[in-house]
Image 1 (cartoon, helix red, strand yellow):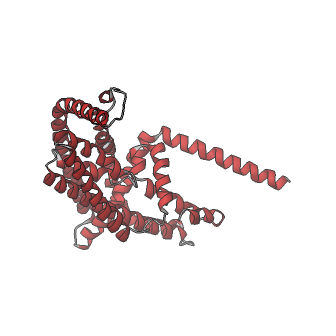
Image 2: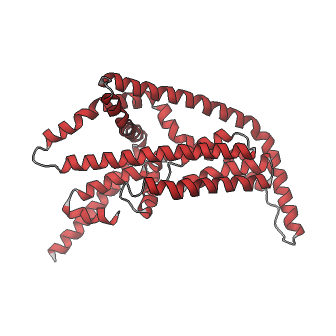
Image 3: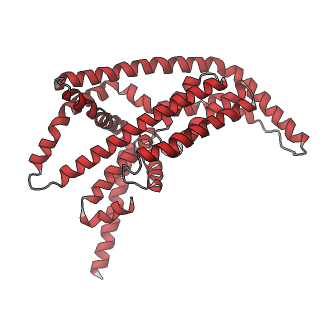
Length: 337
């Protein structure tokens, strides 16, 4: 009886501790998010660092090259985003009136078919500006980069300088155990593979959307391609969210057929890249089931916001490795596979 009570108390204590930790992480998201972004950027850049070192480039010079390249990329990226947002903002008032005309024509068509629909002011609830909040949500991940750029760049700089020394430090810290070194190596390889391939396929998705929407004649095709690139990092639902504003824009700018062609373009790209190529190259690189990836996206998004959604799979991989390191919790890691 006492054993059962003690086990129950341990479970309640663990549950309470979990709630406290999660609440603390959510409250400190503004501090945790820049650090997480820095960690995963350092992991993403580490293969490039080792490649430059193999070419004979000194370590400090290689780190400076990587950081400067990242800054140049972000500068050009900001210019493109700024021009895109300015162009869309100028067009929004005209498309607001166009949306009212489309809704009126839909009501008229339904009445002709004998379907009596109450004339609710849908145009007050569905507006191009509100739909563009999806684009702002995609950029919210970048806002973490831009707002904390100085801190992130410095953190990545020092992390890259520490990367070559980390295996030696782990060996000194745990001379009689290969577990921590093995776990770190597994985590680094898995996360690097996941982020690297995810970035590659997200870029392919964005370029494909840009090319197809340009052929259809949709305005700001580059902007919709950028949104597809950003939201493709969010598992399962990111590509669906990215398609909504582009389809509405095609409907308002051209007509219903253009909106349908835009929908077909997104379906084609996501079937070919998201359903065929990504699983083949990424596969189970993180060793997580599809359901776990989806649920982790919801959980980490709730705790850390958009950054948590983007990094949900690698963060869950960290939790899984933590469970796998202890025999008493190894069953939990098995359930996550």
